[in-house]
Length: 375
Ligand code: FNR
Ligand code: LAC
Image (cartoon, rainbow, N blue to C red; front, side, top):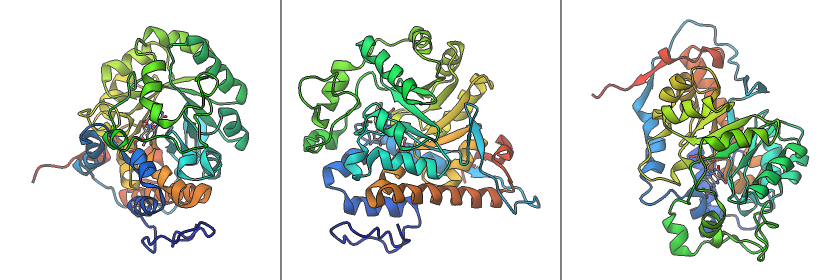
């Protein structure tokens, strides 16, 4: 995809900003390309979208007390997460329905993650089967799991993921019920004809599931009785490390680590679940302190700039994940669009690190950031 965002071939030369220089540019371009119901589903938060907005705005409350006179001639973004080497600390968060954004779908997203040396977390609700996604690249990939009341089906998903070569299970725990997405409800959102939640087709035997049943699917199938005790059961299902996604409290993080999980993703589902939840960036340091190095802490939600990534890593996150920015890249340019978005964020992070006096992500420490003092 050229800087003008042109990827040729796609009908309809909708007008959009000539150059896609920021994630906000990519979002505007995606908005012009996507059918409105699809755009609304991707961008929506729950209820009044207070947390959706707070996730992004909270980064403005943190300032970077940059260092000078350090050799930053070649900033290095490479790091490890769960012991797996990555060239960038920016992972792709699990999001549903990639084929609704672009025909490349999850195969494009997976290939883009591999091309950028990072990790795709594939959603249970993908529009491509976990096996096909796994075949798309040899790069490390994680599988995001929703625990169903039907524990046998849940077990089969985990076993399929392990057999397909996934490198971790990410169990999402902030969705016992689905958050209320008003735009989707008003518009009667449903998965477009021809798209299905491919991992669930067998389980939802009564005809191909569509997005309009998303809240019904969650209500019917998600296990809202899940507790910390189930983490031991989950760990025994495979040899893959277990990461818990959707935690904001330090005490919950500590309980997860006591249950033997390998990672915690500080997340509020991008503001799509409990409206009124805290911004994730404000939850990171409490979770990091409670975990005390016994597991890797990652964070997602509202990350739109390289400086946001720098702040999250300085506060102790091992890596971050981005959700919507990847969807905007996918919508505008398929696999190439996702590569371009990830490259944009990597370049912004490298520039921010140089300007902050940090030659590697290991040098990003708490001393670099502080809450901005009220004027
Ligand atoms: C999500 N998210 C999500 N999380 C998850 O565990 N399983 C899922 O299937 C989905 N689906 C999904 C769809 C869409 C359209 C969005 C926007 C989000 C949440 C996602 O993993 C992540 O927590 C947030 O997207 C991070 O916030 P940002 O980067 O989108 O602001
Ligand atoms: C969502 C569910 C699918 O956020 O996780 O839409």
